[in-house]
Length: 312
Image 1: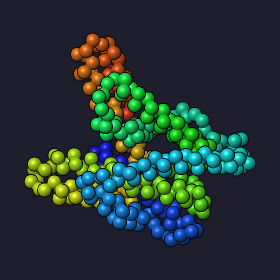
Image 2: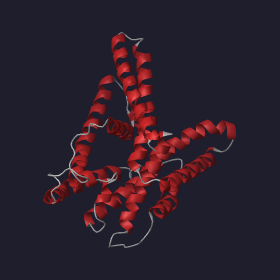
Image 3: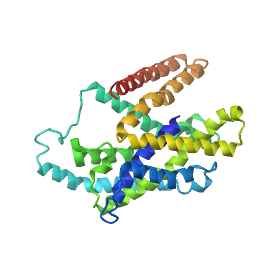
């Protein structure tokens, strides 16, 4: 289910990036966001997701890392000019719609941000594939891999988020790449990299999800695994495409998925595993402490989910 949700988010981003590319002066093609999502989904995303084996994409997955690095470099380099422009417009003096806000005391904003953070953590860590790729796993190795991955993510995403917000402040869109003008050549390249990265991310996220669904359905439907896989991929891509064309609020989608499914994957299940494993060990107090923290965080996640459902 979480993989299918990631596909939905990728398609929403694809619509934003494709429209920015098409509307640039270099291409100058007028196309609606819904048409762009349908076109890319049918012509690119769906054919890439049909094969059961993704070995052909193992080298292309490095494009995602390169795209993130290029985006970060472009946003950081452009931030001083955009920040100076906002300062000239007096946005530091008056906090209005486009003002600078460092802190929010609204608990609803914190809950929404918590749901987005849960989704980002689950999406970026890729815990299951990484765990399967480790050999001779021990506690120190798991800690080292976790520490390095989180440090690398923070080193990239903190400057990206900070410079993106300082560039546009209160006027920052949910997908802040939309803030940059379509005639910016550098951001055109950024959008192209992002579009390619999203198109590759869809089959990478969808294939394990389709295989899981096929594993549950194969016994009941009695169909060939390859045919069942193609059918599941087709249905999932069609549903996600339909939903993506109906919603432009990517932050709302990510926050809802993160607060709901993310709370289960990142908090509830680890809490149950921690309690069951460590209670039997020599550290019952540690188990109780860790599971208590995770269950408390789960309550916050589900509160964020209820808040966003109520505000839909």
